[in-house]
Image 1 (cartoon, one colour):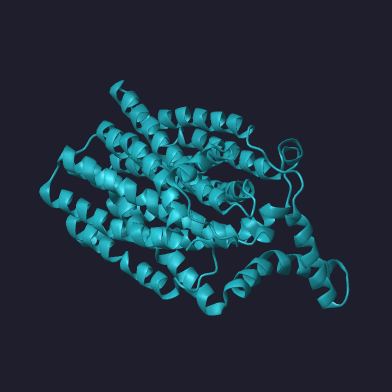
Image 2 (spheres, one colour):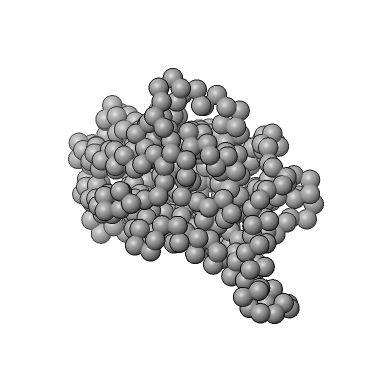
Length: 458
């Protein structure tokens, strides 16, 4: 991997002027928007329908599909979508198909009463999550493939722009969702959330139109290299027939990326990397899953949540993500992750103070800004880190595997966040203190392997 050399701040910022960064920004927005639907909107919708915190928390198990999307990443790398692939390209064809599924799911949601059809509502949410997780495989691969392997600085900048894009889709999409829901509620709509989902469907259509401006290379070495691996396995099997060809395909597409990763890093370091990736954002996820419920219980309106948590938070996230990208270029991704980990612990304590002191718009704004600064630094370092680790022969599969392991910690474990608050009898302060402690194990894991990881710009 090419080492990312230090440069001036102006030189670092100049990397963002590359037109490819705009394309990556859009891809990030497409990836982040579905989380508005199955995180913020769904949680608040269920809360306002009178469902318990535990139910809302366990509903978050639908995010678990993000932890396993690497299982079907090889399929997405190879299978072409009829009509769409030929007209739009392999990557864009898959993205558009998933967007269509999400759009149809929103139409179904607009017809559902949560109290009467909770199982159906969660099932549709699961479909959205599966489509979103599948879409992410292609989005991340297309984003990485926008940058050449020897462009270390551009990869760090691209990671920052991907994060800015993700939070743009999530934050600004959340602003639209919350204000639209409040608008319909004030007009007297009984099913104001259902009407809101139809409006959000329009945003999906606009994103697909913008996607047509993202360049996708027609020919890549990836497919040729994958076929070489298949042929090598076939020769090892000794014969060539339907059965051996199938075995070679499965082994090459699923086993190849894993073997490549462990061969490059060695078993001990590879295991350490996977442990860190799994643990890094668990504390943040526990807090994030219940944050909007906490805001509502402490007394903030949907409008206030939209302004402070979404609108103001988006501006903060954009600025500090770009700065986080510069820090990753200059100091390296590993140092940036240590810095972000410390910030995560401090930020979670701010929310504990807010819980203990009661409703305060000033403290709320400070806590939200600090949280967004932390998330910006942590996410850009994390994305750059795993982007630098992938083998371009298996871009989609290896990135999906690493991202999925990170998501597994944030989704499967954090789904018990609501139950934890209930077990604490609604003691939000203690809950946030516990999320602070959750940050420590990942930093210990990173410390043990920091000098042995084979990437540039540590």
